[in-house]
Length: 381
Ligand SMILES: *Cc1c(COP(=O)(O)O)cnc(C)c1O
Image (cartoon, rainbow, N blue to C red; front, side, top):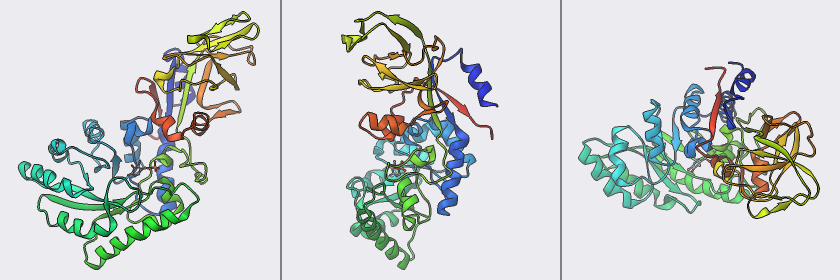
């Protein structure tokens, strides 16, 4: 379907919405596969970084991904409910009480601590079939995982347990998005020593993986059997210091319509606590976007109206905020407002909002509320 026509059709329906280009996500996944020469396990935790879990999973399937990664079993179960049949890896903690769900829906769990061995295998024994696991190594992240030097002993325990099907081994990079090479090299050295020891014992599992977005782009030696990017599949940069190469496309835009335009007289307070008073008679618009949508409650926000960047004025309310429209005298009720994305020659990226808010693009998109309508574009579908 032609996306412009779709937008026009949507105009009267939605007051604020996200436009998500699934073809861009498919393109980015294929781009990473081509750049790395490895299969891609897209990370679609946190509602696919705000882009929508199930539609992004379908796009990943179409792009040829052999495996999907999420943070929690609830996310994996939602994918199974939607009919996604691909292997699914839960990267984080799953309570032993939920292991029966993992078994029933064929979900792979992460085995990252000796304390999990007994409760997980007990659940699998009770269900009468083995639980598939990937072993997680802490090579320097200081988060989940067995230290690399204890890896072999731990793996032998996992491997010899009849109720565990050991399919993979992975680790996670702490600083691959910085121009500090030492940490990543040291992490890879520790992990690689373990992988070589396994090779020597003819014990290497089906999938060895280590590379998040920055690592798979900047550290070729971290690619192993499969790469595990999140942020890059959405066309967002891992960090300012680790930009995306050519050929990636940003998938998400955030739009709204002007709900009201009126002139307030000089000295008029705006919004709760009157955090702004008009300096003169000012044209003030209202947009139906607030902190409950993921737009931060802070001063100094900005949006695009009429192809120009205009200031948000006063505080951000729960469901609405106000904009100063003196630079766009033609603006009227119903006009498109862009919070993330392009309008004419102007553009606001998730990265720009992140730096304005003192955070990173990841937190901006993950904060996009469930209640925002997500409109998908997929011409290839
Ligand atoms: C989130 C996450 C990723 C993806 O990281 P990006 O920086 O978004 O590419 C990969 N692996 C693990 C274990 C993660 O938690």
